[in-house]
Length: 130
Image (tube, rainbow, N blue to C red):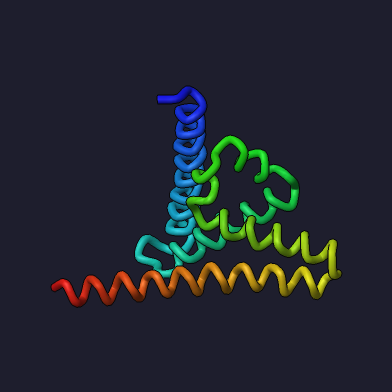
């Protein structure tokens, strides 16, 4: 295996693992706050992870994490939030606040739309193969 490839894979594994661990820590924290059977613990953990991703992106820290972690940095929910924040900042620089708002919303809806479409296709295939 190429040394560069091994380094990239190790970085992706390390960053993805650390972000997964952070997500688990948020989930455990929200379970402690809301109660062990709380249905809202997971959504609260995802929102918390997304907020951290957005703040890190705006502060130019997430971009450095992405350089080390490559796809491992995009694994959790914070990857989507950093993409939305990046599109917002780019649109805001080029077209002002409204352009940034539409740029961020566009990438958010695109990712959700493609993800929903893929989930529906997989669900149909799974239902037909039973």
